[in-house]
Amino acid sequence: MNNQDIQAGTFAVTATAPRASYAAPATKPVPLDDVPLNGFHIKIAGLTFGAHFTEGYALGTIGYALASLNRQMPLDAFWMGMIGSSALMGIFLGSLVFGWLSDRMGRQKIFLLSFVIIAAAAFAQFYVRSPFELCVLRVLIGFGMGGDFAVGHSILAEFSPRKHRGTLLGSFSVVWTVGYVVANVLGLEYAHSAPDAWRWLLASATVPALIVLLLRIGTPESPRWLHGKGRIAEAEAIVLKHFGPNVTLDGGGADHQGNVRGGFARLFKKDLIRRTLFNCAFFVCLVIPYFAVYTFLPTILKAVHLTEGSGADFLLNGFLVLGALIGIWLTIQLPRRVFLIGSFAVTCLSLVALSLLPESASVAMIVAFGIFTLTMSAFSNLVGVFPPECFPTEVRACGVGLAIACSRLGSAVGTFLLPLGIAQWGFHATMMALAAVLLIGMVVSIAWAPETKHLTLNEASGA
Image: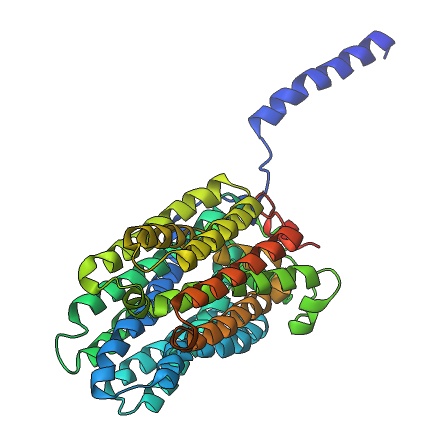
């Protein structure tokens, strides 16, 4: 064979190779972070959104129920604060316990158990005979909610594609707010309609809780959690069933042997401690004013001489929903840090204005309260976004649970102290104290908040 024959043969192979590749193109694997949004994503989102509606509803009923309950069981400031904060104390305990269990036992078991507890305790509220009994049941409701907050945020984050994760996680706040506002509207209309109306109002949370519980039966385990525990075949089977044969976990956030150590101690290692402190601190500073103000909204409106007939309560509840919807759009459009820091600044200034305005300036106070409500509701979306994006799979539920626990402990203390503060120091000084809490949140966010918007779930959990 001469050189011309060799060159001709080489040319023939080279020339035909591209045609062969077009005839049988190789299929490129798609990471789970980049899989297109499908019906299964919507189902998991629906199950978590339904839970947040229930939780917002269950927490929202207590403000107006307390006003009605007070006629049958007169409550002093101590019991008003205890009952108002009891569910938050339960969330503190539940998020720690169930967050820890979820990283060890799996997401799916806690996904169900949390709502068994919520449904049973909500129903039992109808039969309470003392403030102490109601307080215990509210703690149990919060205990179940704490478990659901820890595992719900984690499981949706671990299934969601990167492109839509911020929207899906941020929507938690919208659905929670809708549930909260529905409870407020029902409370406004029916809390005083009969002597036992407060019992029906509190126990009505059983209905959405049971619906969520039944729909959650059969939910699969998180494949990222299974992968992190070395249960590769089970993880791949779930991915194959719900996303197709061309989707890969892309490492799943842990090694294949399940040797990555989790637990709360892991959160305070050098690579994660700053993110741990940030998530706990910003969450605490955000929810203390939120729960303190809106748990006792009727009391606060009365303190500034805005009675139920003024329409301010309906207006502010409308602002809660509108703000939550605006928050989804801002979560998509803005960097996480910009949205967080700017919102802390606006809410802080709003409460400063509210504390300085005279009680006679009703219109100005409504405007300041409206700006506070819109902004607070909008950036509350970030409490569902930042924690799951900041922690690796092996400690994601622990990290989310710890942040929630710290936030609810802080908000429980704030909610307990708010009626006492108004009674002791007056409305204006109390609002200034809450403004100081928001200022601390802004400073912490400037110093420590990471930017996680465009990262994959694995990248977002890096140092």
